[in-house]
Length: 538
Image 1 (tube, rainbow, N blue to C red):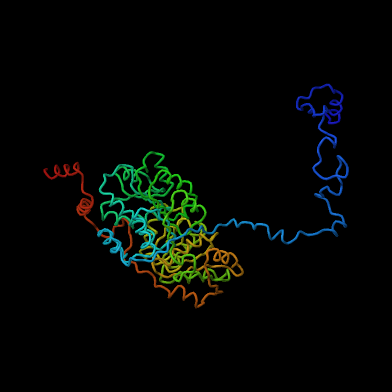
Image 2: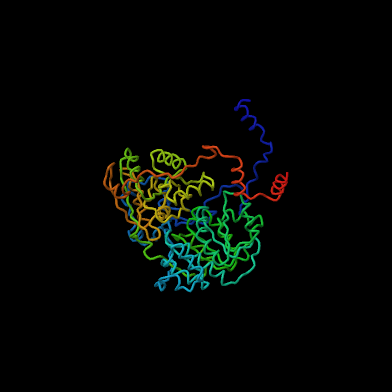
């Protein structure tokens, strides 16, 4: 049907009901309709006559000003802008708490009146004299206070919260272990960090008769269920897997007496702030110990909610440039990046290289191994067994270089890392702070080297400024003496004592010897022992 005909047919039927519209409203004066006289409403502006408004007083919105108005335009006085409140900076760098000024009164752990077995285990671990954060927070935590400790990674935080946990459990006496109800809880952001905390804490706990277990994702939960059913004293967990077990009614936190939140700022970065809040709510009035490298807005919210009047300690000089870490920015031509980077990782010291993606980590690790530099990698696509094996290779020195992403590398706690090399710059200053914390640990010195192209120093300058760090800038080329100064002399190729040949048979081995070795390694069960006895009686 043509549109013109349709329009005519509609106008020729005025009586056709139209149910899609309602009748016009009735005004207070009896008139109907949406339009109104100007006098029906009280004018809001000053007018020349009643009900009328002067044209000059009307706002000139969306219209071009006349030449006369442009001449008569008077700018606002400067005081009006100066008195206006400044816009608040949306970036909250750090939340400040009043920290205690503590002069270290303890030069050894024996002076803290710790149990003798614990001091002996600390001596075996090489911890003879306490670090400043340990000397300040251990007595406060043992006394029962909430503790908030701020210090970079490598400042000794694991022993700072591990020792008071074990000591307070011992003071509570030998209580029977209740299945699925740990007495102390440690929250860590990553699997690697949970494992390393467990490796440090297990000797201390076992020396006085307590047991620990780890709870994290990426592996089967069967072994974790069995350990909880047997009963444990200290559970070291990541928030995700712990909440899964709580929902399955396999963990009950009602008997927890002490809770430790380690690397709280990284918890917030990974989006664990809500799970951590829910977990802390289930622990009731337990003692809280929170340790973090930085204190941002979300961390301060946890402190204010769960830790009334905490003992606050901040490692001296953490907000300023530290003497044991040098921040170096190497400005280079992109064509020379491969040669310069290869020279940096050829030194005999250990190096951690940070990249942005998993694909870069895999490709770069393969390239370095092919060029003769023993390298391991650590990223999110590796399963837990691969992560543990690679981290063990790097810790023991079988691999001198670790290629890592930010999420996975947060669990790297190796004390003798010489260089932290940033192939890809971080996105914020907090990530830079945590990367830098991989070196300069436990009294060692180290350097953070950032590789940037020519003309691209703006981002690293902003990051260093927000992190309260001052860096030195050098324009380098292949063969520059500064590279040898940073990396040291080129290390010789690694000497391999033994290789894994799998099930290859190089020499003939008798079957009887193989059976004997297997039985010595794996004792047979009763069924097989009876079978062997029947065989010998024939």
